[in-house]
Image 1 (cartoon, helix red, strand yellow):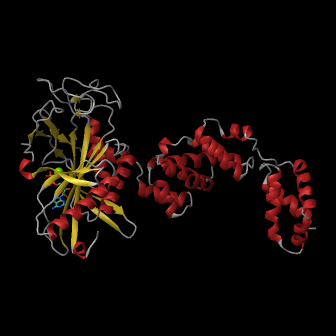
Image 2: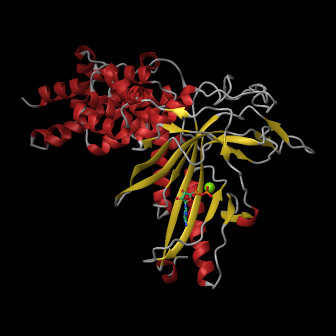
Length: 482
Ligand code: ADP
Ligand code: MG
């Protein structure tokens, strides 16, 4: 529970985010990375740490990290080196990870986050390159731990923030922004649940107004943005309560336990690794030339903020709609495909913002998993634009298309929803409604013009939803207004 004591403190948070890069091959070995391969099928002698093997840098690793650096306003070091980070672990056969230590390739950047009540800039200390370790598997064999080295040597970037974050909500917004940027740059798929983004959170508290930071703990093992937010929240209150009770925070690594919703100690500072970093002797320094930097700048795609402004201008939509549609690159791409097909930005945003987003929310899925592709959706909207179906038919067909792969037109025919715009068919229906409802006709003639809705409703019902409502309206007014 939040108390007055809690109000006296302020939290200080810094995040270390690892992003797995979407390069086709590993960081230092010519082996293709394919998701879901059988264990230990994507390995070379280098990944196994065999003596005599030598690493060779994947040029895309350097290009991708520079893209990230440029997109976040970092300075790019013209010369930086790799370092060995030494530790022993069964999933690390070489006995060290190739990383960067005191010369990160990108440094001094910033990420802007937007919260409901304010915007804020979070400083980036550095972004550096490293390789991933393999994976120990503890739950497949009752007696032994198994090891899969497919992941050993896959390329990562580590993005280290300044301790500028003050609340769990800011941490959440910061992570969302990183995900958005890496997806726009197409350098990482940004999925934290699947481990392609990972986050360690450093948390400390201090009395408000004091400049000196408190002792921090480092939180690990959160596998979603929500859990990062929860773990930080839990940890802030744990630390404040501890201090208020006369205790002291000890520097330690703590693990988030999702089922208990709490953090617990994993190791203290005394047990912390001493990695004995030293320069990697097998790799030359990375030299970034003016030419290379210019070339990468040219390749940078349109990022979310710019795209959002363009949507407002080019498609004449509100800023709120533009923010929603450009939040994910994939949703923005989808929207633009529909718009291009229809030649009508408004019709496209109407359906994407209503029906499509409703389904994405209901099913908690990404647009990439949505079953109606941009082309099929466009055909559906086109039927309506061409007056071949009415809006209630559009809804019905849309729902049907979610679970089937036929085209909108096929469903429209199958469900008998092609709109009737033939007055020869509609006129007798309208005549019958008029003669069956003399009271309503009288009131309409006496000036209660809203009754038009009643007549249209009756005609739609009588035609089983197939009548073109506009034509029905014309027919009725023609008959009653003279
Ligand atoms: P390490 O390599 O031991 O994790 P770093 O100096 O790289 O240490 O810092 C890691 C992260 O911790 C950075 O994001 C930094 O902003 C953050 N940080 C440093 N001091 C504090 C503190 N007192 N409270 C909260 N976060 C901190
Ligand atoms: Mg750390």
